[in-house]
Amino acid sequence: MKLSSSVFASFCLITELLGIALFLRGFFPVPIKSSLSSKSKLSDLPAEPVVGSNPNSTKVPPPLFNRVVIVLIDALRDDFVFGPSGKRFMPYTRNLVESGSSHSFIAKARPPTVTMPRIKALTTGSIPGFIDVVLNLNSQALLEDNLLWQAKNTGKRIIFYGDDTWVRLFPKHFLEYDGTTSFFVSDYTEVDNNVTRHLDSTLKRDDWDVLILHYLGLDHIGHISGPHSSLIGPKLLEMDDVMKKIHTSVITTEAEGTLPNLLVLCGDHGMSETGSHGGSSEAEVNTPLVLISPAFPTKEDMGEPVVVEQVDLTPTLALALALPISQNSVGRLIPAVFEKASLREQLRYLHINGHQLSSLLRDSNPGFHKASEDRQCSRLGVMHLCRQTWSLPLECHKSI
Image (cartoon, rainbow, N blue to C red; front, side, top):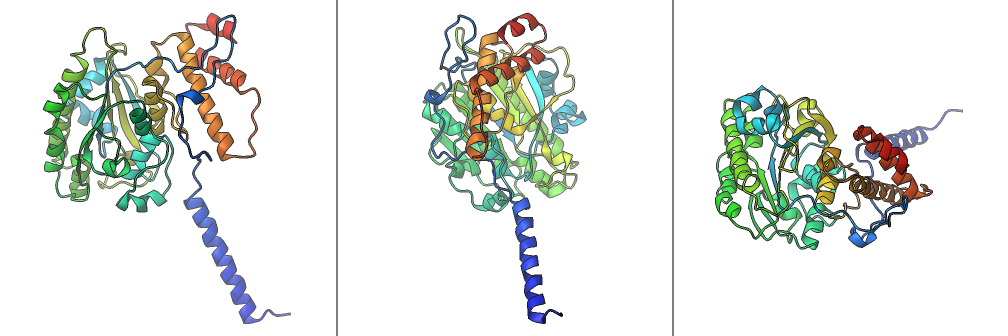
């Protein structure tokens, strides 16, 4: 029996609609998010698993750093710091990477590699979807649990200068701010001068705890003439001078008896060989992450930078500042940052991170069931630490 033309047409239409729906479901996946609308609190932290006769604790270990300065250079590729360009055009920063008190990583930024989703990833620890590319054109206030909200909620004073996307995402978080627009890509000079002009006066002040700088000039040069433009070198030299100014002011002149400060150099995304970004090529997703502080041991050589996820910075900074980890963070702690903490504190950091990740899995997946979470997290934390701290096997085995 032959199907009528109308039935066949309906069948084709339904098949096409199902195909489009399947494509959209894969291209715009539902992000992993907690079903809870509230934000993480220190009071929600789990107690330490009881080990031996030591009393357990419900507290996060004390902060590791006093002040934090985050220098985000838009479209900073990893080879602009770790490659030949870094050695030639960022000599001061490269010296800190090779022989300073620092840790260097290649932080992988997940697509879409455009600015607003990357800022979300850096502050929430979650991985935004491609729908955020559209939202990038008109960013709204970020209501999701994030690092800046946690910092402000605990009384930390935050100052921001740079890309005004931050101002739109965090309209009430900054003690002081000056935003510059990112849409005039032909301007790669004033857009950075408007950031740097605040530095001298701000670095002399003591009324802030977190300083965030977002430079746009390198990204604009990429859009104009690509990563091999003659303009790239002078811009990297300019950024190197900024790093030198901040390092000599904030890191090398710390007051005695205070916690050390932390300087973070990172990029939101990289830059393709044509100067664009947004995709998933190595040049677009590989960004440098350099953490500089006297709290870290002095290096003898640069070595090969360890690869981490960009979202790993969120829980690392949160716990290093004694803040709760954002609810929707999928990041993992960067162990090197906590290597000078006591063994118990390192285990506690891992326990808090493991508890937060398991809570996110449970909230986002109703079918997930966990058993003996504290004990499991404790055992996994100890096993992980034994792999990282191979010189302490006896203590690890006793803890297990």
